[in-house]
Image (cartoon, rainbow, N blue to C red; front, side):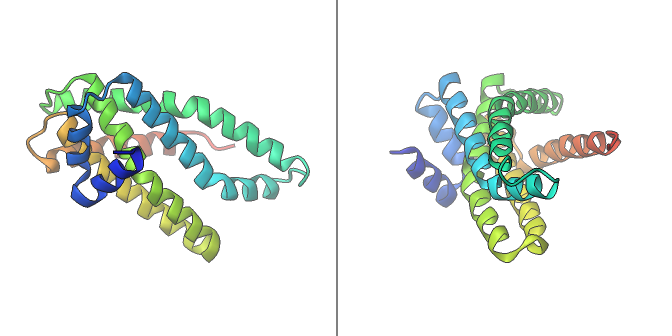
Length: 189
């Protein structure tokens, strides 16, 4: 089955079941890297119109805005997967503390599969946000984030061999809360 078909299958039958199916078919590090690169690219495409508006609003000349957008996208394309690898490592360590038994590879597969499964929803919410205007774009982004966390909790419960999705969700909520606190502590300039 094609990757698009696998994602649709996961949306119909459960994201964790979709991940289990991928792991049983021999998903390894090469597939994980492909998933995170593709998910990052789709997220860049979804955020391109809003990024372009922000670049122009920041005072960049309209002629230079496409170049700034391309540079920003390339920067994100290279650093995004590295960031996701780091997030998967932190999530795996937190899951180990909560009693998980899965290997690091499965933690990466769980996160990257969740990113890939939520990418179509991110594209859809970005399109709707651009059509409906900036007032509704932010709530749609929060909806996409909530959906991602839900999908990630489901995939991590399979990847880390948790017995309970609730425990997985609580572990991810603790990680997310910590990240938000750290982001809030960053100086703004």
